[in-house]
Length: 483
Image (cartoon, rainbow, N blue to C red):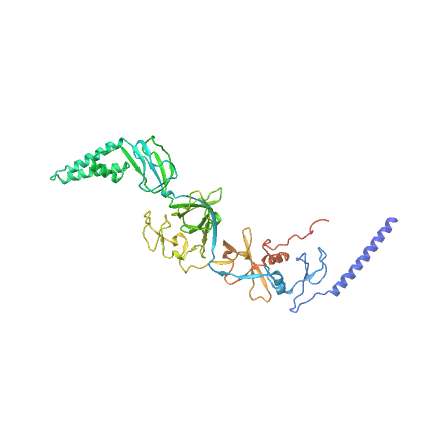
């Protein structure tokens, strides 16, 4: 009996609540009918926390029970990737736009490295004949020598036999009878010249050979002279040593020109070209800028450092640059639309592929190595004024996430300020600009300030955005969780 009373009470309460709810809904529908705008469109209402909620009348959000707010009628007229704002909202958001344009911009590549010897200006002084070193004229490394300075005084009995051959050949030429046949004369002259060449190959200079011919006295000592001027950077023998043919005695380096070896990251490789000018500084001379030319780009990437070695030829006639000095270098480039480097100063020039310092106005050969010169264009330089500038946008206009880049473009001829999200393909960054490969046209207006706010507004409306490219509904708050 008691249980029956409880059931009757609960049923009465349920029925009363049902009647009350029906009256409330009827009253709400009567007080808030669907509203039509001036254009005949139905005014929609949404939740500020859950923008996926759309109703044709005011009320409560069925998820969080917040009051619904009206949706601006302009929003209903934009596309899936577009959003419109009032002028007042744009002022509060501080939105700024910039025109997409074609122009040459400067990219700057910062690299570091150190100074090294120019390997083409290093000479090894070795013994050309076996013998005993009686004297070394340079006693320690670091000594500066000039071309032609005597370095080694070497005793070598092997020289005696070769000099005796020369003296005999010269005597035979002098003793030729006037009526001797041309064949005999040519044979004697050829023999004498062959012996002279043999002595020169043994290390004697032309002057030493001539002295032996004049005096007729052979010598058992050989003086070795410096083949170039420079600094003695290595000494591998001492007085009294017996040396064999080819034994290294000195190494001399000409420091009037040096190499600057730099490390460039693979990200910077699009800007690097053979023959480019490089500015660099060293710690020893703050504020002083040195310059050089890229003469070699390593074809292999270092797998540990992910860098590529660059070699720069630099002048050191003042002797300020010393091997092992650390340097900070800058490569400045102006890319063209086709990816080449704009260098109008090289227009019509021909460059040596081995020595980039050799630049001529017409085709020919290199004065140093004799190689055929090539055009500057073949090395990746844009030298003519007809080259089209690249399409660029300010770096702040692009929202980059992973491999995607999104910009917000102002829709032209819209009744209210409207912006469209667009995925574009970016090229490399050049200073404060990005080069655009595709996705934009010259003259369009892109948002450079406030684009994150626009993107956030699109995310709230569950439209495609930077972080949500498909525009799918995002989980909101406590939705889907059990209390």
